[in-house]
Each structure stands twice: as structure tokens, then as C-alpha cells.
Length: 285
Image 1 (cartoon, rainbow, N blue to C red):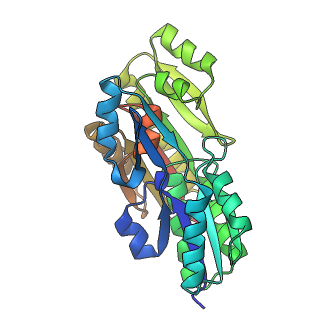
Image 2: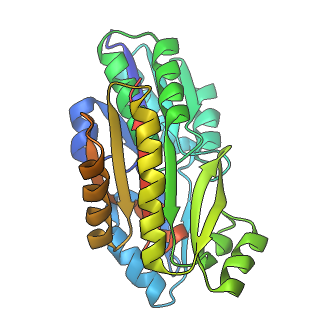
């Protein structure tokens, strides 16, 4: 038997190269630009940023249960004894629901794990789960490893405006109106699986500086509990700011973990908008 297989979705920010190397299977969400739908893994996030700037309508949709069924069937046919499928927060997307629907009819046991977050929080959880599976971990061990990794992770991000999140229903309209009315730059976090307004600052430069402070605090806290802490700095068409932030974080506190600088996935980018910068602090189990 091939042991436990790990599945995640395209919003995890794992590249196809990383997924192939670690044996993780990616299931793609869909990006819809002016009515034209394409799999997220085929869409350059910078095209989404350009579409939003041009005022085009950008929406997204979850994978269908049938898409998950095809993946679970193929993994069973390959000899896997079980699957652990980890996805972005169920309070943000219906992806977990689609995976759970497919799991009911799968030919092998499928455990669906809600990461309670998005981006590389989900990605790091999948990588830790895949490592556990490669060392012969059982289903319960793999799922527990993923949950622990996701729960220990912290994410903060800056968006230039809250309108995109409001339009997609990913943040409460009241919070979006506050940000717009005060002409401030919002800093957000994810708590209890939901995107929440964390702070508001007056300028974009101050928002990035505050993002660094929050990242350093989270990094110091995580380093006190774990021998290795991974960092991901996400952005949408704002690589210069992301690289600066990553350099500042790694230059202030030494750690032996991985540092990932990546464009946000096209789906996530479509909801947060151009210029977004975010940081994920993820202690290893």
C-alpha cells in the first residue's frame, strides 16, 4: 500500500513543483473574469490584479464535489489506503464542504481538515502532513499534524482598500464602510476562520511598518515554542514591498526555518485586491 495521501487546494500557494516533490495533490478553484471561468492554477495572479484595476468583474468558485471525487478515486487506484484533504477556511469558502461531500462516496477513507485560514497557513499544514505521511504516519497522525500546524500559525495582511473583500462577502460590510469613511489603510487577520479587521493606520507605508512589527512579535513568540519557524510573505502585484518585509523580518530575528515570498493565489488575490501584502508565521510541530 502507498500509505496516506495528502490533498490540498490551489489557494494554499504551493507551487506545482513543490506539490510534485512532496507528493501533494492540488485541486484547483476557479477564477471568473468578466464571465470567463478558468482553473486558478492556470491564471497568473497579476492578470487578476490588472483586471481589478481595469474595473472588470472578478469572482471565484469552489471546486465541485465531482472534482474531488476524481482525485480521491485516482489516489485509491494508485494504492493509497486513505486520504487527508486540507483546505482553506470553511467560513471563507465552500471548498471544505465540496471535499466532504466527495469524501462520503470515496472508495477509501477521506479525512477533511479545515485549516481555518488561507494561503501558506494551509500550504505549510499540507507540507507538514505530507512529511508525517512519508514517515509512515497514520491518518489520525497526519490530520493532527495539519491541525496543529494551522492552529499555531499567525497571519496578518494589509490591503489598500476593503472594497474587494466587501464585494465578495468575505468581510462584514460595516467594517468595510469604516475603512472607506476614514480613508485609512486596514490591517487584517484571520480569527476563528474569519477575516477580521485588526487595526487601521493612516498610510500605506505605516501599514507595512506595522505589519513588520506584528510579524516580528509573532516570530519571537513562535521561536520561543518551536525549534524552527517558517515565514511566508504574500503579495498581489507588490513584490518590492514583500521582499523588503521578508528581508526585515529575517534580518532582525535569526531562525532556521524556510522563507517563502510568493504572489497570492489568483482566487485570494481576487478578493483582497492589488497591492496587498501579508505575512504568515508558522512554527513547525
